[in-house]
Image (cartoon, rainbow, N blue to C red; front, side):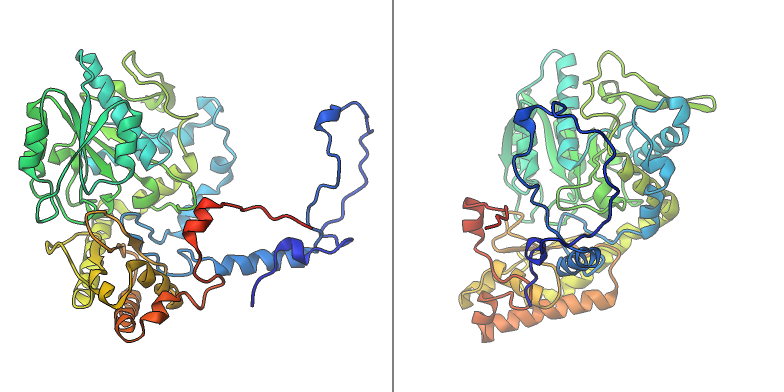
Length: 480
């Protein structure tokens, strides 16, 4: 049964609240004529039960992490403990104004400083800023830090190298920071091609941006050679921390030769994300880049916490106030509750879950790169094209089985890619059910491909014409 719009439920005269008569004297000239509403406000007229039921019904039609498995590769959409949500809603945190004097925000400053210290320990870095609002914002911040470092040495340099498996935001961040992106191919194993890297390295190279594990889910086993090659020409090595969920407590970016890493609190450290936010992308750096960090930074003098202004080499603020504080509260509690051993178990179980799914699905879907993966695995639906089926059809059909689709068509170096990341929070039963659904869909592609081409058939909305929607966007409801 289709759900009516709230405006279609509306009937003149219905009330959802009873307000006292306004006792503020009306002044005709209080609002300028050109700013006054000329007609009715146009809000729906509905009762309170109708409002509540309408939006509850809408909420259960939407897929979310509390409703079901969310296997988006690279995005780490894992279940988040509700105790972290409760902590972020404590009035002392939730109602604290960012302009409150440090004297009256000691708990918040302590939390931020201790969170920063924890992130430095996890990443193996020496300095950190919590200001960046998300991963891409962290990328830009890291690039600006590296640019300031090179400018301090008298030459900002011109280019930044990325592999062909890079996250899509990497080249955009590079250009925004004033650099030229230089792409190199991956080798036959899906890893950085050392020979290709060395062929483009020179004194004009500012840095290389990579994700480790990479977007195929594989550990860059020659990372020490990569770092050495870059450092030999005076360049820096940047790690996109989107896949840090595979490393915690096992290996640290700072120990692998990275100079800069951004950390997605909203992926790795328990914060809901998606749909535009919230997010947080702290950037951690080695000591030679610490003078360039944005400020102010929380510091401790004796038993008192305060804000310290950045030094003269700082790149300045890169966001309003001090970052997305509510995200920091959740991440801080998650780290404190898990402890060092718990964080290591997170990564170990994420790796185990991924390779369990890999073993179940490999007989049914192509696996272009055979190396053992860590926290995510990238299959290909290429073999299904002989039945006229695309990866899009597989993703749509999964909705009929009650599962959100994994990331598809990324990374671009895998044709008809299915990028799956189960995370550490899913049970064996959930993984079995998900694998069984994908196996059944592969069989349906052979026996009844039209079923997939028409999917989804059990969702509130069927297959949409996404190309037309993108070209003719119209999200407004207009009453007759």
